[in-house]
Image (tube, rainbow, N blue to C red; front, side, top):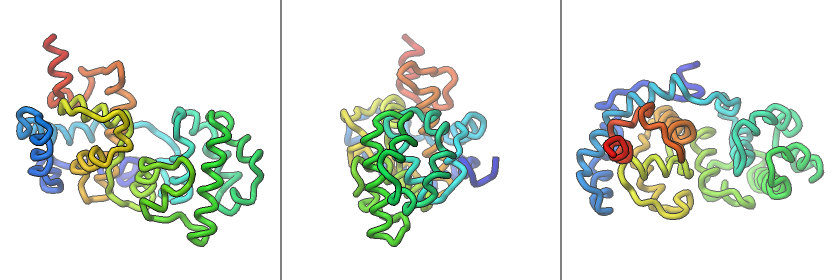
Length: 259
């Protein structure tokens, strides 16, 4: 795989990574949450980052949308990925973008045509409405282009902060944190961090996880991908702790291994 795509920058030392984040801010936040031994926990996590990125390089998932930075494809793919399996989106990916290569073609299409393209993903009517709203936003407010603004990207129906942030990260190289249930579960387990019921809607959680994302866009891409894939493949509801690159720094893994 190329050095920049699909995963981004997957080679960094712990010392380099430490210089790119605000370690004191992370420790201070964990202290404010009553997390025990925050300095030790953060240091241990930083030391595992090279192993985590090595794991990503060897095991990261291979999807067609990871090979593009085209804003239209990235933005729409994030809508397609909502509440469905990534493999199901991969099955229709090429067909969808052959039919709708840009916002104008989607705006011009009938609802039934759009619905038939996304039927297999489930929630066809809702997905059709979101896609039409997205295309209209691009055509009517941004001269046929995808906006690079977090709030604007959330204007279409049922497009939330995760999809908007993913578009900024993967299309516009904006180093932001992504939060879904899988990523939240990783941080909950590693740091014994109590997550709210809907972490993907919590500004506080975005702020916390964002402190681990460096300003280097290629490295931010890689670290987000590593969290996404680790949460989907190993740190699941049925975790495979012995195989996880974060095993040595994870409070949950250490606790369960001693039970």
